[in-house]
Amino acid sequence: MKRLVSALLVGLGVILASAGCAGLYPADPHGTLSEVTGGVLRVGVSHNEPFVSVRGPVPSGREVELVEDYARTLDAEIAWTADGEEELVDQLEHGQLDLMIGGLTNRTPWEQKVGLTRPYTETTDEFGQQEKHVMAVRKGENAFLLDLDEFLQSQGGQS
Image (cartoon, rainbow, N blue to C red):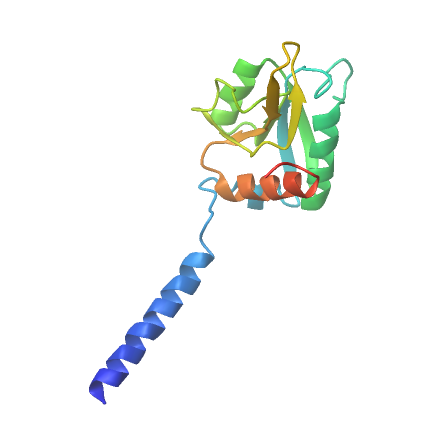
């Protein structure tokens, strides 16, 4: 009887530990997903048509439209910041931005500094090479990255 009670207690402990861990992963060390939900989504944009155009006061383009749709799912306002890729990556690393767009591909040299979504579309470049397009988030913000990835895949992205 004592063994049965011990086995039941161990089994209950495993179940409770598993249930507790399931709520923790993926996690955002800096709380990006919870901060932008119902708040402000800070997006860095780099001019790269047709994905992003920064010719006017408000950016436009395919990726801008996707981010606007994503922000609606979060009930978030968008604060746009237009700059060059290097400056935007620096701002993303330091938590001044939540997301960066601008026609990035999965071959981006910034991969070591940022988190990348899964490719959400594919195009052919001027040399006939296939390019898989991604978006960048602050490295380690995995809950936010997963949520954005799921949104992009729901919009017809690749898996």
